[in-house]
Image (cartoon, rainbow, N blue to C red; front, side, top):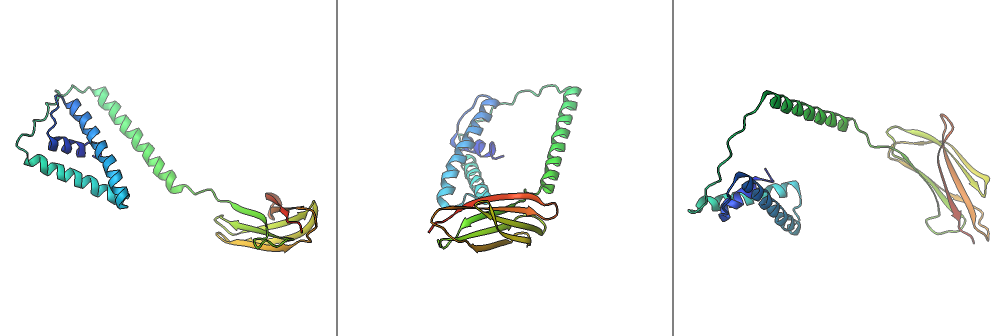
Length: 214
């Protein structure tokens, strides 16, 4: 309807004569595109680039063009439609099969969309102190899982064990953070944090940062 009806009414309103049904359809689609492009600029300027805004725009274009076309006394006649072709049984069967396949594909897509769950994950970070203080690092966990999870965090400093946090409970959508004091030296140190799942002791995430030097 969007690609045909507005263009058809615009053609009737401005009195463009077409010689065949195919030519009329092509002109109608082109005029609909032109109305859509003009509507994009108008709706963008008005801040109404929304489904409702588009519906109102095409309704207004179609209604205004229909009124103008009805008021014209020299509106050209529509081109004659070609005689309908004979439809054979196998063509009807092929059409019905195509409809069934398309309907089935759409139903599967709707079902998959309803059952789809966005990939969930755990965000894990290790950063220098946000306040800029030397010798302090911040470790954090943010859960986007669907169920509460427990994690272990192990922190090393230049390859040596430094801090351990066990059985950290992180509910869905929550964030756990700790700011840790590190003995800052005159040279940069590398701090590394590893995130484990206690139920299988598997490494889940690994991050690192440089400890600001004095």
